[in-house]
Image (tube, rainbow over all chains, first blue to last red; front, side, top):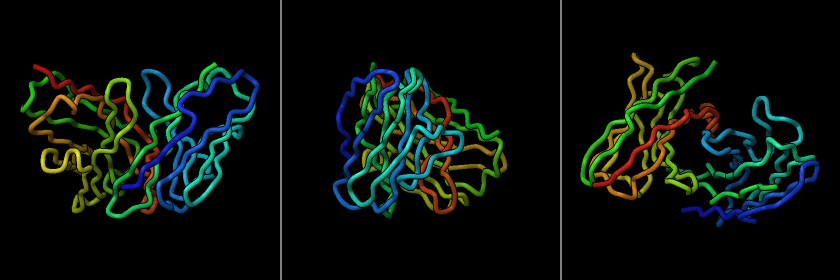
Length: 108
Length: 120
């Protein structure tokens, strides 16, 4: 099983600042990495797929990078609606065993 | 507009069974693999199962293999999850999630979830 490890567990930042979230895979997942945002009481929302491609309707302040085992989600100029929990997910292996990271809580 | 809507959650005793449903609309249902993902209270996301668009291929997380069965009815645009031999650790919100495309294994649309509580 591929284990996904996110850091930090909690990130405290201020509106207008930049946030950098990390995700590490226990073995290479190539670019088969997605990021999701989840707000309290809501379903997750797809932000990034293919490690760096923004999903439909996602603002340009969200960007993803990395490949192999190291990935980063960057949110520039944080807005109040960005404070949420962020999960990375790998979808590289076959048969499918899609694993998520434990999440990073982005708080004010 | 793509929509997926889960139903069927509730309170069930350990060892019991429950069937979840997910009604899909706004896309050609039979063209897309569908997944179940769960989230225990206050915890992270755990992928549970996937079924191909044709329904021929199914896969499960080790934690539910042999107890849960995923299926779909394309005539009704509905996804199912039959859950047997339920345990306390199966307590979670269960989300239905559409796969992004034929070679796109991420999940681009999610339902709002249905809560399953396993308790005596």
